[in-house]
Picture (spheres, one colour):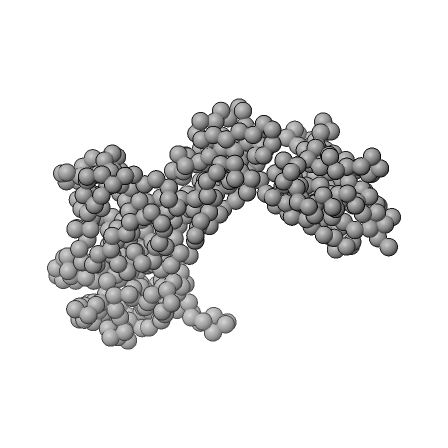
Length: 504
């Protein structure tokens, strides 16, 4: 009869934080295995030392390489793969002999732990049990004495070995986060926190629950002093300080603020960029059209200021006033804020007194045109023009002139704001103008509510374009003379415009 394999979580370092089950398994095991570097010292063994017996068989699994280079023909990965295979074989010999083997693991065995490499090689061959342990993340949060996540917040756990750009993007979007494996990666992690705007919130925890424990604001930590067993923590944003309620309008406090105009994309969270998600999370105030504001999750501590869709200028000035009195404001906009949306309204006001000194940033989003094009195929694969059919802010004569010019130039057209309850004739008139230059069978993509629950994509001939089937939630993509509609083998139709234009 074969022996039993145990992966034993020891917790974050303090021996008193080992579970009763972990102590029981160690006491009953025949073989105690643990990893160590070449110097021979094992943190895992030191945690469990008081429970080891003189008659325990100890298997010290010494890493062939840690931070140094290796001359192994397979490089670092090859050296480690060979080591894990050899270590698994050593433990298998004990298991085949009927001995119980306990592999010690700091924290939790299956949470960034070395034990998992033994588990993957042995668990399908021998009876196995994993004993969970208190993770270093839980220990760090406890030592900081501040909530890690609360309510609907999401905790993101990241290895500091990720590329800086990836770390920056993930930290910008995180509600709360723990970045592990610091040591040599600390400068990269610090830059990522700074670039993501989260450095001021970041806390540093070193050797949580151990004798040499240290906590500090991360921005104050000397990079040369950071060991591997340390962590960066971004705690819960719930109840985080957002300034006081001073005498300024809206109960805001004095001091520097800013306005960030954020593109939400065409629909829900799948279309939101990491940068946009991070700015929405960091804002103290959210300002926007009610329908778009409702797409942003409610966060404790944030103030939401919803308004009608036809008061862009008023909304922009309101946001700038909040920022002028010290608030960090996100103005939300569907699609991309610079495409027939709120960026222009905010900048128009921000370039006049008294708002000239208010910082304003624009965060892009996925446009409705690009979203609809992707659903249909690739109709925007060559030169194209973007035109709004709304004559609320410009005369129809200007729209008609631009339609004729773009059609005569044989450009693919993305037509925004094609119709509404009060504008019912524009689509029909645009069809007439385009038919002066385009063949009746020119493909037209009608994309409605792209990414939303009512999404519908249809492809019709230009001559058959029915204005009654178009509303404000629809975007039209009108092909050029080169745009093609092809039925593929699965029965679906795709629209695409060749990248190469024929010579005249």
